[in-house]
Image (cartoon, rainbow, N blue to C red; front, side, top):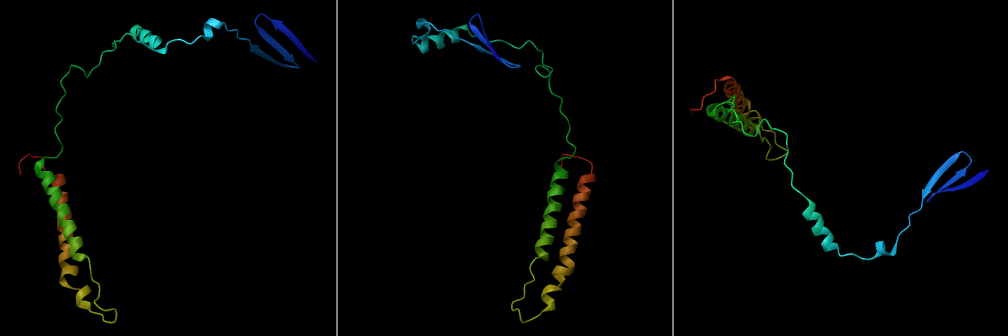
Length: 141
């Protein structure tokens, strides 16, 4: 049960319950002639007009407020010093390889440098960083 009906320039095809419409496009020889693309582009450029936004920006003419930093120069120097102390403690604790796998020497692993000096350096570094966080901000060194 297919019915075909023509209507104007388009064609309606009915097949059962489905209806589809196809459009017929007719072209003239004038439309197929090549045109100079440069002239079209320049004419488009001439027609383009730059526009300005009409929206008012709240940030355009207002001076920005200077927000004071939470930490001053002194605080940042102390933070870097504390990090350096922590790194020094880690370097002091590193190592401990035996010169020979057949020999066990406790003085290499359990020496003063690794057991006492390195942890004290790390704890001092942590204390300096903690102090620098809670110290009042000042720009003096």
